[in-house]
Length: 319
Image (tube, rainbow, N blue to C red):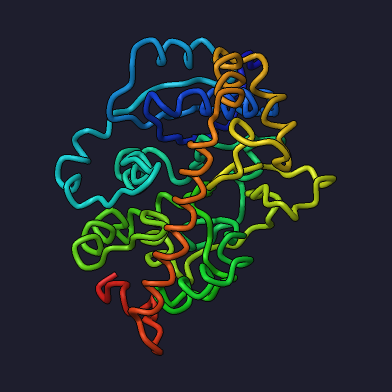
């Protein structure tokens, strides 16, 4: 009789963070653990440039029998392109780390990339198993692009991508094997030297490179808590992007999900305090940043004139 324990399938998951985003990563990780399945082992790869030992310990202390956490430096990857990475407002260079995953982890053929400002209400293994074929990613169309006309115009006229095909890059199933085949990191570095996308930055680059090589998923896997959201619908993943942040504002759809998974994390009291002390001046700053983003998108559209720039013209012929 064979007494060997059956090896469970490993689900590779990738986050990128710095010390400022660790509180939100803790909430996301807590929700991932709460909805994990005993059928799988989950390996959480946290991509960092620098991270305090204290925050590393806090994250490691959250590990369970089948959810493990480890840290991976992208410092070497950043050295060659750091000066060319465009940042604005609350963005940090961590947002670009997802481009490094395929080459950093050649042992994986696929994986899941997740932003920190999310809550997961279902088993993330379901997203990992999303159908890919030869597509580079599986992702959800970005509701900010599809629902807000100025950003839809930006996608179509500046990037050359139809509004319903532009995806949000915060939740991704990655076809790592195919990404290595097409040398996606090299494509990104080359495109970075040719064009500057200032509205959604890394997300724009990824959309251009992956145009027509994307499996589009249902909105429930990356739901933006916009004011007109169906509050009775429980998303598989709620994504608290832009100014839809329950740790700053009242009346955010799906806020109860965030606080549910924040409650027993190390940073719960800090998050409550952040909300209680978020000032009118800070809220005005948020509003001005969003208005600036709208004006930037308008400027980019106007600079294109009447002609759209087809995205496929920016994808390299040799790939």
